[in-house]
Amino acid sequence: MSSNTTPQTDRTESRDQSDDSESALQTVVDQLSEVADEIDLDPNVVERLSHPNSVYEVTVPIERDDGSIEVFTGYRAQHDSVRGPYKGGLRYNPSITRDECVALSMAMTWKCAVMDIPFGGAKGGVQANPKELSEREHERLTRRFTHEIGDIIGPMTDIPAPDMGTDAQTMAWIMDAYSTNVGETKPGVVTGKPMSIGGSEGREGAPGRSVALIARKAAEHYDWSLDDTTIAVQGFGSVGAKAARLLDDWGADIVAVSDVKGVRYEPDGIDTMAVPSFEEEPEAVTDDADEVLAPEQLFELDVDMLVPAAIGNVITKQNVHDITADLIVEGANGPTTHAADAILEERDIPVLPDILANAGGVTVSYFEWLQDINRRAWSSERVNNELDQEMHAAWDDVRTEFEQWSVSWRDAAYIVALSRIGAAYDARGLWP
Ligand code: NAD
Image (cartoon, rainbow, N blue to C red; front, side, top):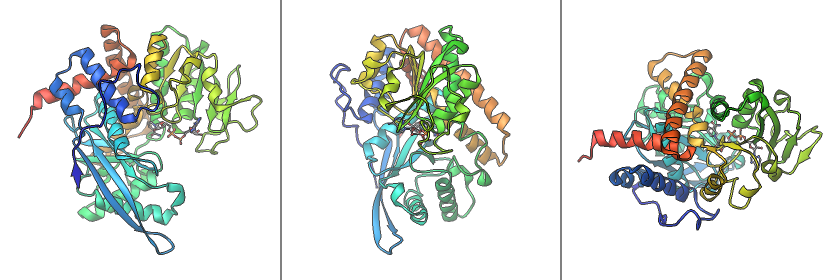
């Protein structure tokens, strides 16, 4: 069932040669080896981190509503567990691949380590289009997939969470199927659950909250007043809308927000509460807007801060030269390709990386897991206070490395993460 293989990536390829067809796996492995060189990380640790611990591929047969049987392919990549159980989302997406799961699992390892959360990285999913599944089919697929990976997940081994195409209900079915199989209720096997079965206050809003907190810290770092800062946000969903509304609340001028249909542009500042988020009304950001721009024009706007919070690989070698913002805060996972990142660095446009900025999601997932293990719920005030503390601590750690090594913010975050992981390997050693 399991296979351990090396990522198929030519690590000698230079940044200049890489183009925007680079895979997510190539980007993550390139970044690992680049930062490892910069900080002189023990090559033995780099070697171990270049390989996922395990990648599981399973077949998931389900009965469709019309009585036919369809077989789907599911994956779970477990990258590294030196600091604790594996943690990461499950995607239902027709184009998900094994390599994509490996890349995303590696990014989760770094994200947990930047936040000093005692988890390692995992990611998985099923090659299925959730829009083509009825609710009953979604449930059958989820329960059967849980059964197939039942031996390798668990509150102390690997804890899935919602991701693209999955939600709190999906997590509830996983929790129920897993608990039924093991004979006792185990809420800690997944996070992002409904509140009625051990979900946490504040989980939904956490990634957007952390993006806003890091944006505010970055503004302070560069001596900007938020009151005088103009911001454009790509994507007005769970992450983008929450981040935009908090920053609006804290005094910033959100002058543009976008969805797949276009950009709502109001140079004097948008009332972000009056614009429906994706959850409130899908793809309605530009409805009733006075000025609507094409989606790609968002990056060309003359703003102080740009927050890509929609999907991955949107800032590429092709459009990076159009960007005029002075600072980028990554809300989405992997919005900037490796090649574009290098150009932004050359152009002195700082990029606050996803593994720091949107890490509020996994941080509150950790809080949820703690609440489940202890069977004691926290108030939303406690969740938000502890999240703010964790984000500020991670910011301080990353800023220290940023200043000490004179590297990019992304490299500084990698340095924090890799130093922690390296220290754990050092202490534990290799056995048997
Ligand atoms: P979402 O589905 O709630 O919202 C996505 C938004 O992006 C929608 O407004 C959609 O219209 C817009 N969008 C999609 N494609 C676009 C395009 N090409 N151009 C402009 N807008 C586009 O998604 P979300 O949960 O907010 O996630 C956004 C990103 O943040 C993803 O990369 C996700 O992986 C990442 N992320 C999410 C979480 C979380 O817990 N929700 C945590 C960490 C990171």
